[in-house]
Image (tube, rainbow, N blue to C red; front, side, top):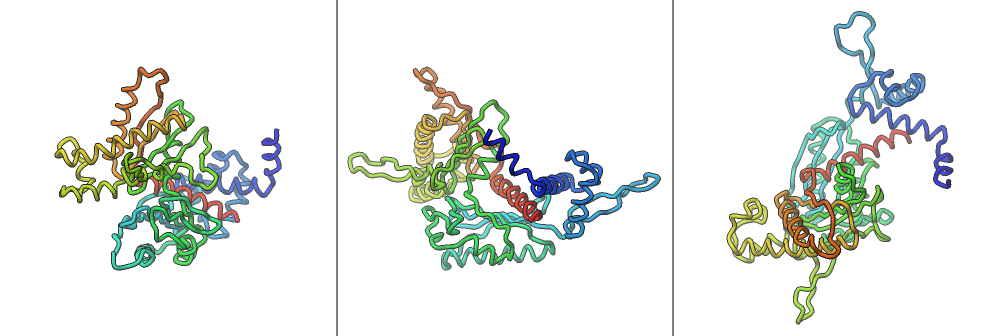
Amino acid sequence: MTMDADKKQTLTVSNIRNINVANIMQSILRDKTKTRSELAKENHISVMTVKHIVDDLIANDILVEKVCEGNDVGRKPKALQINEKYGNIVCINLTSVDEISFLIYDIYEVQKEEQTLEFDTGRSYRENLLRAVDMIKEKLAAMHTVTVGVAVFVPSAYYEDVDLVNYDLIADFKELHIRQLFTDAFGISNILILHDVVPAAWSEYESMDSESDSQFYFYCGHGVGGFFIHRGTAVMGEELMAGEVGKMLLLTDSAEKRFTTFEDMISVSVLNRKLREAGIGKTFKEVIRDYEEQGEDARRIVDEALDTIVRVLYNLLWVYNPGTLVVDSCYSDYSRLIMTRFQAFVESLANEAIPIHVEVRQALYDEYHMMRGCFHMVRDAWVDEINN
């Protein structure tokens, strides 16, 4: 009853109009062009309501109306579309300690640019970050269209009230007011700073084709994290740190009582270092590409990581008890190895007194789906901005 009452209180004339504006904009973004009558029918509103909203959007230079092309005899209908000056959405990946990558999309999610900037070790993190910003701005200037939003995803929790990112993985995030930096650089207010696992986990959850209503998303790349969604509700924790499974302590030497973090045993960066220290002249990416053909030393390093992951994930199942476990990585070969090793382990315990029942699958999307998730969040924020 309280929930219903709250909904009734929020359905003001102003809010109803905002909902209609957002629905009209989303309809046009999906199909690129729409007639007024199509918008009315699709969104279950009157043609007069569409007229009032569309006229305002045209007056504010958001929409334009053009005569439809065709050979039909008689009066030709007019179609609405987003003004061609809009726009670009930039998605920036700040999850690596070695590089910064970015994608630039147009307003319809067509990828226009992709680039990675490797860090200059002679410069500070901030200097490298500003180099990347200058590179992005140069690309945008050549496009001659308006940038409507920027998404930045980071490898740990972001605290909006103080504009700071937890600096456990990248020490140079300490005292770096990241949203302010990007606001100043691009001169727009629509800047979203997102913990990288959040948009990725949501995109996987929304795409689930099963009866499961809960999902634990596990990511193992340069950083390690997880995210639990239960019946459409994300579990964030008191300080937004829930799911930071990479920070769990694992015993490495019982005699000496030595511990290390889960992340420092299984991340891509750590495994690359272990391969170099073992004198193996291949990167981790190359090793896992044809894992079955590798030498004993290379496979031992990978197997130690996989066995550690399997034990931790199994323990996590007893904590979260999800219907679905999604395994993801910056390298699909790594997530595939994790998934198959874990599936085999769970199957080996099928005759236990309390067996674990969980659907285990590899992430459905490629390594850029986090950026796509960010794209939609930023574009939706831009549509909301139009209302204000």
